[in-house]
Length: 247
Image 1: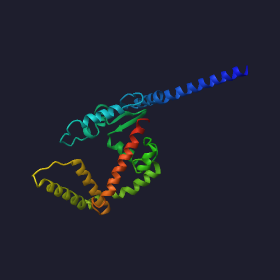
Image 2 (image 1 turned 30 degrees about the vertical axis):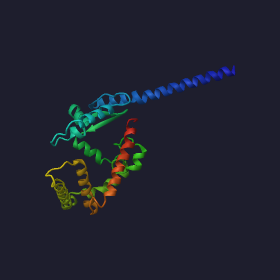
Image 3 (image 1 turned 180 degrees about the horizontal axis):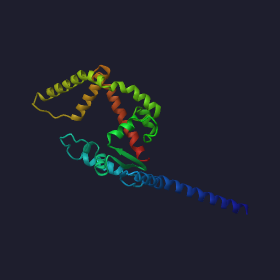
Image 4 (image 1 turned 180 degrees about the vertical axis):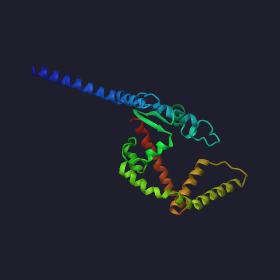
Protein backbone atom coordinates (compact mmCIF):
# COMPACT_ATOMS: atom_id res chain seq x y z
CA UNK A 1 0.00 0.00 0.00
CA UNK A 2 2.78 2.41 0.92
CA UNK A 3 4.61 1.55 -2.30
CA UNK A 4 1.43 2.33 -4.29
CA UNK A 5 1.03 5.69 -2.53
CA UNK A 6 4.69 6.56 -3.14
CA UNK A 7 4.34 5.76 -6.83
CA UNK A 8 1.19 7.85 -7.05
CA UNK A 9 2.88 10.78 -5.32
CA UNK A 10 5.90 10.50 -7.61
CA UNK A 11 3.69 10.36 -10.71
CA UNK A 12 1.71 13.39 -9.55
CA UNK A 13 4.93 15.29 -8.84
CA UNK A 14 6.32 14.48 -12.28
CA UNK A 15 3.06 15.51 -13.90
CA UNK A 16 2.98 18.82 -12.04
CA UNK A 17 6.64 19.46 -12.89
CA UNK A 18 5.98 18.71 -16.56
CA UNK A 19 2.99 21.05 -16.59
CA UNK A 20 5.07 23.76 -14.92
CA UNK A 21 7.85 23.40 -17.50
CA UNK A 22 5.33 23.48 -20.36
CA UNK A 23 3.69 26.59 -18.89
CA UNK A 24 7.04 28.35 -18.42
CA UNK A 25 8.06 27.58 -22.00
CA UNK A 26 4.68 28.70 -23.34
CA UNK A 27 4.82 31.85 -21.21
CA UNK A 28 8.36 32.77 -22.29
CA UNK A 29 8.03 32.01 -25.98
CA UNK A 30 4.40 32.91 -26.70
CA UNK A 31 2.13 34.24 -23.94
CA UNK A 32 4.45 36.99 -22.63
CA UNK A 33 5.56 38.30 -26.09
CA UNK A 34 1.98 38.36 -27.37
CA UNK A 35 0.81 40.15 -24.22
CA UNK A 36 3.56 42.76 -24.65
CA UNK A 37 2.65 43.17 -28.30
CA UNK A 38 -1.00 43.71 -27.39
CA UNK A 39 -0.14 46.42 -24.84
CA UNK A 40 2.12 48.22 -27.31
CA UNK A 41 -0.55 48.08 -30.02
CA UNK A 42 -3.03 49.71 -27.62
CA UNK A 43 -0.60 52.63 -27.29
CA UNK A 44 -0.76 53.16 -31.04
CA UNK A 45 2.65 51.68 -31.85
CA UNK A 46 2.71 49.90 -35.19
CA UNK A 47 5.21 47.32 -36.36
CA UNK A 48 5.80 43.67 -37.17
CA UNK A 49 3.90 40.87 -35.45
CA UNK A 50 5.71 38.52 -33.11
CA UNK A 51 7.16 35.42 -34.75
CA UNK A 52 8.06 32.63 -32.36
CA UNK A 53 11.73 32.27 -31.34
CA UNK A 54 13.51 34.34 -34.02
CA UNK A 55 11.31 37.42 -34.20
CA UNK A 56 12.73 39.69 -36.92
CA UNK A 57 16.30 38.40 -36.71
CA UNK A 58 16.11 36.50 -40.01
CA UNK A 59 14.58 39.46 -41.83
CA UNK A 60 17.21 41.78 -40.36
CA UNK A 61 20.02 39.51 -41.59
CA UNK A 62 18.37 39.06 -44.99
CA UNK A 63 17.86 42.79 -45.58
CA UNK A 64 21.47 43.56 -44.58
CA UNK A 65 22.81 40.88 -46.92
CA UNK A 66 20.61 42.14 -49.77
CA UNK A 67 21.68 45.77 -49.26
CA UNK A 68 25.37 44.85 -49.31
CA UNK A 69 24.97 42.79 -52.47
CA UNK A 70 24.14 45.93 -54.47
CA UNK A 71 26.55 48.77 -55.38
CA UNK A 72 26.36 51.65 -52.93
CA UNK A 73 24.53 54.74 -54.22
CA UNK A 74 26.65 57.86 -54.65
CA UNK A 75 24.44 60.15 -52.58
CA UNK A 76 23.85 61.13 -48.96
CA UNK A 77 21.09 58.56 -48.39
CA UNK A 78 23.22 56.05 -46.47
CA UNK A 79 20.46 54.63 -44.22
CA UNK A 80 19.16 52.13 -46.83
CA UNK A 81 22.70 50.81 -47.08
CA UNK A 82 23.95 50.67 -43.48
CA UNK A 83 20.59 50.18 -41.69
CA UNK A 84 18.27 48.67 -44.31
CA UNK A 85 15.90 46.99 -41.86
CA UNK A 86 15.61 50.11 -39.69
CA UNK A 87 15.06 52.29 -42.79
CA UNK A 88 12.34 49.97 -44.10
CA UNK A 89 10.55 49.90 -40.74
CA UNK A 90 10.50 53.70 -40.49
CA UNK A 91 9.17 54.01 -44.02
CA UNK A 92 6.34 51.52 -43.38
CA UNK A 93 5.41 52.08 -39.72
CA UNK A 94 6.63 55.57 -38.87
CA UNK A 95 9.28 57.13 -36.61
CA UNK A 96 8.33 54.94 -33.64
CA UNK A 97 7.90 51.32 -34.66
CA UNK A 98 7.92 47.86 -33.12
CA UNK A 99 10.22 45.02 -34.08
CA UNK A 100 11.33 41.82 -32.35
CA UNK A 101 14.76 40.61 -31.25
CA UNK A 102 14.05 37.00 -30.48
CA UNK A 103 11.28 37.01 -27.86
CA UNK A 104 11.93 40.64 -26.80
CA UNK A 105 10.03 43.59 -28.28
CA UNK A 106 12.27 46.38 -29.55
CA UNK A 107 11.20 49.97 -30.23
CA UNK A 108 12.89 51.64 -33.17
CA UNK A 109 13.11 55.41 -32.71
CA UNK A 110 13.73 57.83 -35.57
CA UNK A 111 12.33 60.88 -33.77
CA UNK A 112 15.24 63.16 -32.68
CA UNK A 113 13.40 64.44 -29.58
CA UNK A 114 12.61 60.94 -28.33
CA UNK A 115 16.18 59.84 -29.03
CA UNK A 116 17.50 62.78 -27.00
CA UNK A 117 15.15 61.84 -24.15
CA UNK A 118 16.47 58.26 -24.13
CA UNK A 119 20.12 59.34 -24.22
CA UNK A 120 19.71 61.81 -21.36
CA UNK A 121 17.36 59.81 -19.12
CA UNK A 122 18.75 59.09 -15.63
CA UNK A 123 15.54 57.91 -13.95
CA UNK A 124 16.24 54.24 -14.61
CA UNK A 125 12.92 53.71 -16.42
CA UNK A 126 14.66 53.23 -19.76
CA UNK A 127 16.91 50.16 -19.57
CA UNK A 128 19.23 48.60 -22.12
CA UNK A 129 18.73 45.06 -23.45
CA UNK A 130 20.51 42.27 -21.55
CA UNK A 131 24.09 41.69 -22.64
CA UNK A 132 26.29 38.64 -22.76
CA UNK A 133 28.48 38.93 -19.60
CA UNK A 134 31.54 38.68 -21.86
CA UNK A 135 30.58 41.99 -23.47
CA UNK A 136 30.80 43.72 -20.09
CA UNK A 137 34.36 42.42 -19.71
CA UNK A 138 35.40 43.61 -23.17
CA UNK A 139 33.41 46.82 -23.44
CA UNK A 140 32.35 49.01 -20.51
CA UNK A 141 31.11 52.47 -21.51
CA UNK A 142 28.00 54.58 -22.04
CA UNK A 143 26.65 51.96 -24.44
CA UNK A 144 26.47 49.32 -21.69
CA UNK A 145 26.39 51.14 -18.33
CA UNK A 146 23.14 51.85 -16.46
CA UNK A 147 21.83 54.35 -13.89
CA UNK A 148 24.28 56.37 -11.80
CA UNK A 149 27.34 54.80 -13.43
CA UNK A 150 26.04 55.79 -16.86
CA UNK A 151 25.25 59.35 -15.69
CA UNK A 152 28.71 59.75 -14.12
CA UNK A 153 30.51 58.52 -17.25
CA UNK A 154 28.40 60.79 -19.47
CA UNK A 155 29.19 63.82 -17.28
CA UNK A 156 32.90 63.07 -17.62
CA UNK A 157 32.61 62.84 -21.41
CA UNK A 158 30.39 65.87 -22.05
CA UNK A 159 33.08 68.61 -21.76
CA UNK A 160 35.14 66.94 -24.49
CA UNK A 161 32.30 67.49 -26.97
CA UNK A 162 31.59 71.13 -26.11
CA UNK A 163 31.28 73.30 -29.23
CA UNK A 164 34.17 75.60 -28.29
CA UNK A 165 36.49 72.69 -27.60
CA UNK A 166 35.58 71.07 -30.92
CA UNK A 167 36.37 74.35 -32.70
CA UNK A 168 39.83 74.23 -31.18
CA UNK A 169 40.37 70.83 -32.77
CA UNK A 170 39.81 72.11 -36.32
CA UNK A 171 43.57 72.51 -37.03
CA UNK A 172 44.12 68.85 -36.07
CA UNK A 173 41.21 67.77 -38.30
CA UNK A 174 42.62 69.83 -41.17
CA UNK A 175 46.12 68.35 -40.76
CA UNK A 176 44.71 64.81 -40.84
CA UNK A 177 42.74 65.51 -44.03
CA UNK A 178 45.79 67.10 -45.69
CA UNK A 179 47.88 64.03 -44.82
CA UNK A 180 45.19 61.79 -46.31
CA UNK A 181 45.11 63.76 -49.58
CA UNK A 182 48.91 63.78 -49.83
CA UNK A 183 49.05 60.02 -49.24
CA UNK A 184 46.48 59.44 -51.98
CA UNK A 185 48.41 61.66 -54.38
CA UNK A 186 51.60 59.68 -53.80
CA UNK A 187 49.77 56.42 -54.46
CA UNK A 188 48.35 57.76 -57.74
CA UNK A 189 51.53 59.43 -59.05
CA UNK A 190 53.24 56.47 -60.82
CA UNK A 191 50.32 55.58 -63.11
CA UNK A 192 48.06 58.60 -62.68
CA UNK A 193 45.43 56.48 -60.90
CA UNK A 194 45.21 53.68 -58.37
CA UNK A 195 42.78 51.36 -56.64
CA UNK A 196 42.46 51.48 -52.86
CA UNK A 197 40.32 50.26 -49.97
CA UNK A 198 38.44 53.46 -49.12
CA UNK A 199 36.89 51.88 -46.02
CA UNK A 200 40.34 51.24 -44.54
CA UNK A 201 41.55 54.72 -45.53
CA UNK A 202 38.70 56.44 -43.72
CA UNK A 203 39.17 54.17 -40.72
CA UNK A 204 42.76 55.39 -40.55
CA UNK A 205 41.57 59.01 -40.98
CA UNK A 206 39.10 58.69 -38.09
CA UNK A 207 41.74 57.07 -35.89
CA UNK A 208 44.27 59.79 -36.79
CA UNK A 209 41.75 62.52 -35.93
CA UNK A 210 41.03 60.95 -32.54
CA UNK A 211 44.72 60.44 -31.78
CA UNK A 212 45.74 64.01 -32.65
CA UNK A 213 42.74 65.74 -31.08
CA UNK A 214 42.65 63.74 -27.85
CA UNK A 215 46.26 62.70 -27.28
CA UNK A 216 48.39 65.00 -29.44
CA UNK A 217 49.94 62.10 -31.34
CA UNK A 218 49.49 60.63 -34.81
CA UNK A 219 47.74 57.41 -35.81
CA UNK A 220 51.05 55.74 -36.63
CA UNK A 221 52.36 56.39 -33.11
CA UNK A 222 49.30 54.78 -31.53
CA UNK A 223 48.68 52.18 -34.25
CA UNK A 224 49.12 49.21 -31.90
CA UNK A 225 46.47 50.60 -29.54
CA UNK A 226 43.98 51.09 -32.38
CA UNK A 227 44.67 47.57 -33.65
CA UNK A 228 43.96 46.20 -30.17
CA UNK A 229 40.72 48.21 -30.01
CA UNK A 230 39.71 46.79 -33.38
CA UNK A 231 40.30 43.25 -32.10
CA UNK A 232 38.27 44.12 -29.00
CA UNK A 233 35.32 45.25 -31.15
CA UNK A 234 35.43 41.95 -33.06
CA UNK A 235 35.47 39.95 -29.82
CA UNK A 236 32.57 42.00 -28.39
CA UNK A 237 30.52 41.46 -31.55
CA UNK A 238 31.17 37.72 -31.54
CA UNK A 239 30.11 37.56 -27.88
CA UNK A 240 27.02 39.71 -28.45
CA UNK A 241 25.48 38.10 -31.57
CA UNK A 242 24.94 34.53 -30.24
CA UNK A 243 23.40 35.93 -27.06
CA UNK A 244 20.85 38.12 -28.89
CA UNK A 245 19.41 35.10 -30.68
CA UNK A 246 18.58 33.51 -27.31
CA UNK A 247 16.82 36.44 -25.57
